[in-house]
Amino acid sequence: MKLILPLATIFLLTMSADKCNEKKSGDGTYKAKLEVKGICMNYTIRLLEGDLDTSMVVASWTDESTGKSYNNVFALGSPCTFPSSIKEGDEFFFKIDTTTKQECAVCMAFYPVPPKKLSIKVLEK
Picture 1: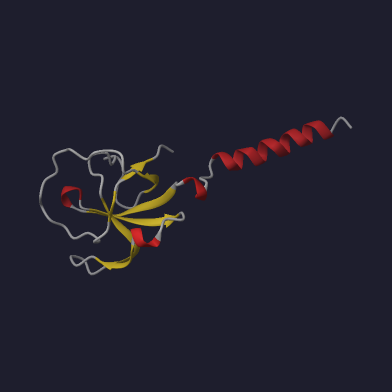
Picture 2 (picture 1 turned 180 degrees about the vertical axis):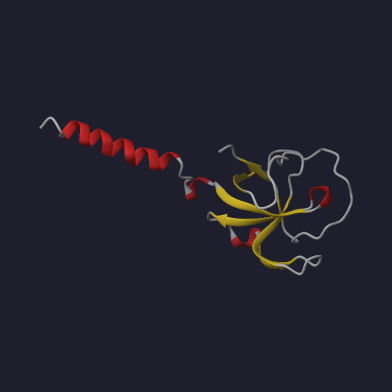
């Protein structure tokens, strides 16, 4: 009888700890990877996890500069708020953000990006 309470507590703590690091797919949170960090914030981002409407991403796109193909990608539409600490190849979580106005200076040099853009807010880990 004395073991039941400690075992139940350990079980609950273990189950809760797993849920702390897990992002819920139904809460509008998505996992992505910065695939191409092109000049002047011309970034290509690949959707890794989440139930994002497929019409918001490009199913298959080829970077004409490198010839490399990518699936489920979009161009960064929120250059003013994208963290500079995220490097090419990094994975991160985000939410769609249509409320923030993007009014910052961004150079006009061209690097190819997918035709669909999304404004996103990167979430803290």
